[in-house]
Image 1 (cartoon, rainbow, N blue to C red):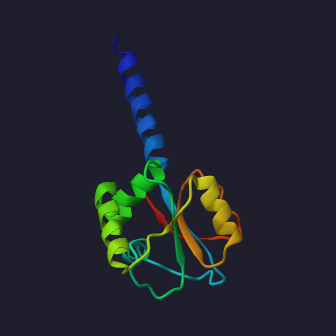
Image 2 (image 1 turned 90 degrees about the horizontal axis):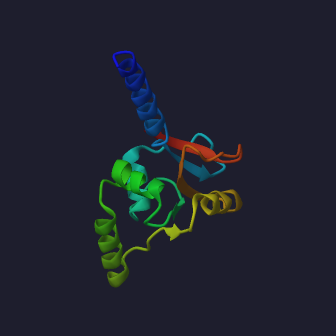
Length: 139
């Protein structure tokens, strides 16, 4: 039995490492300015309809998507219910428009590739083409 404890511990630690590696999110843009730099707060502002120094259009994933849940937690800092409430108020008052929503990361990547001036968040599993710029890596 004592021989199995270190093996179980190593297995548990390696599993934890893999799970954490999959929690990395890339914020990716289709822009001619490959030197563009945005911090977390600017990205949050962009996806929540605020102003930033670049003309980029945000693309969002559906609420049930795990990458969106991670993005909301790590960048926006709000629950999905709070975000939906916020956008309902913004739509009602006509002040802001929510980011365009696509159904999957594959569609987000396709939309990014085909539309200059767009920005989206993707999981670290996504294969980012060379014509797109990784703006920020969020772990």
